[in-house]
Image 1 (cartoon, rainbow, N blue to C red):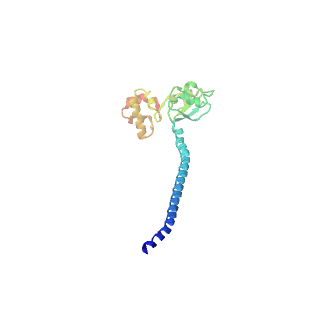
Image 2: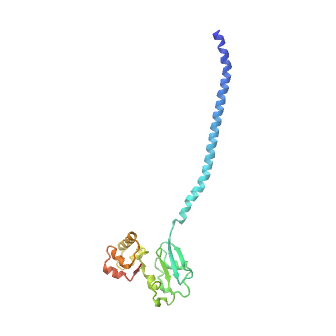
Image 3: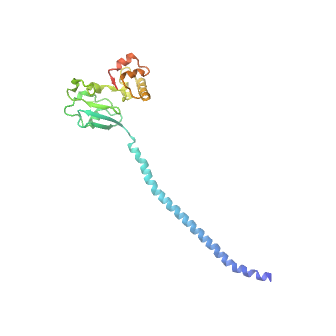
Length: 204
């Protein structure tokens, strides 16, 4: 009795079990397909977002070349603040300002001198040199500014070589601006005789 009654329920349950397993497999496959689809969408969206980010990251490279700025004043066509490249000379600054004005004393400036960042170039008017204005004559323009001069400009001074030029700039960076020409005595290696030789060639 027991052996004949057992097979009947097993035969009835087997199809239902197969159907249940099949449904589970289908659900797993659907879930896997949905997961892959979401991943592809996220990947596509991420690719679109990366492009503008990389473009924006490259844009700050454009103004990286800072250059230097000088104020051109006096007898030029267009006075104002101009951006120049490192190594440019007074002639380049005046060209950026539109050139000499008609009443400019063209011999009043050294066109071959290299400009320094932050300096003011004043082109005197004809006759202004005779007046001897302390802030804008040709003599003042020819002086080297201790607060803006480059090592190359300082090296042109008498008794100032590359090593001394570096000391002057190092003192300026450590202590701030020179407030007077006499501050040069605080630079190691500059004594009374050297200061006397430089006094009429530099300004602050």
